[in-house]
Length: 158
Image (cartoon, rainbow, N blue to C red; front, side, top):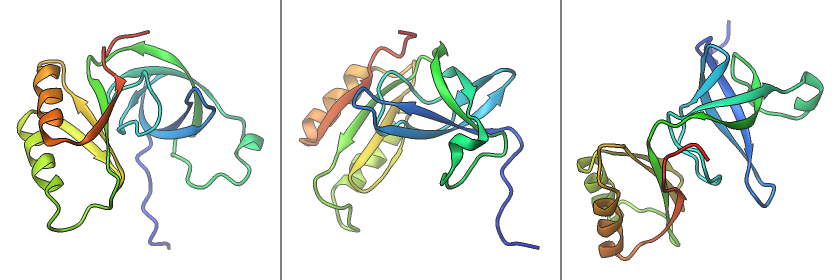
């Protein structure tokens, strides 16, 4: 018996390459023959949380040295099949997040704006839901003075 939790049977990992060739691996939920992106994209553009994507299975020999594998396997991204309508942007932090850091107020305010977010101490991906004004979110970020960038501003299939 091990203490390692099992993944739900319908979880997979989808590898996506950005334009510079860097690979990001996103958790996804199997939906028939497609995958619903479950994670916030921190490095790749054109994909948002809850988008339905097409991907092809990675052959086992191509996983040499690969760490964790979702129970449904690892797949390489092909294209967005159906957009969730979510728009993604990223906030870039130059210093680590600390207990008294004013960015905590930022995260609380993003929650009140009906946004989902997640990331690391230096980068957060923010998912703006279709019913939320993107202008309101961007205006708030600008007023805070944080550096941010578009990752999937349209929330549409490219």
